[in-house]
Image 1 (cartoon, rainbow, N blue to C red):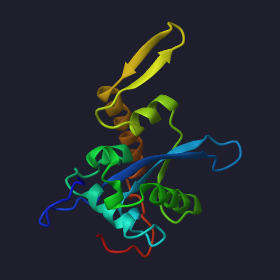
Image 2 (tube, rainbow, N blue to C red):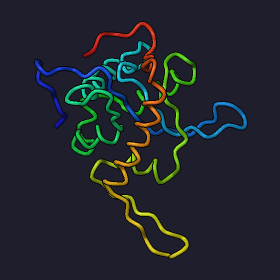
Image 3 (spheres, helix red, strand yellow):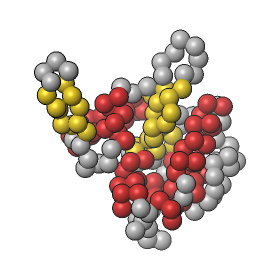
Length: 178
């Protein structure tokens, strides 16, 4: 069952959504971009599928700490491993539309080219494990919650440097929250 916040709960405005997507190269000779962080309010952009964007915004902004980066995989975990997504919205279409907004300059974002392991950790749920083969030793290495937290902290440091003077701009003509 989806997490539904009480009506009297305070909405945290400075929350960010982190999601992985199909890689792209912004310009020839640049690093691959495969993960994006946007301000929660970007989900209220008129070029994002609605009311899906507003519903995801509601999940994202309730019961969070200011400045928190919430991976899409965390929302999936909170929605009973994803079984609650149909009652919330089409996250795949919403994230595809967010990438289009970022690429067209209609909002600000932190665009990242994360290494495979870091990306896998952030795409896995908060209590999941990622197994990788160490080619040198032939041993399987298990990465878990501590490594995921470290990867998320690294993204938080990048974002903190980016928003030191001005928060990420979510775009113009935003709709009201759901």
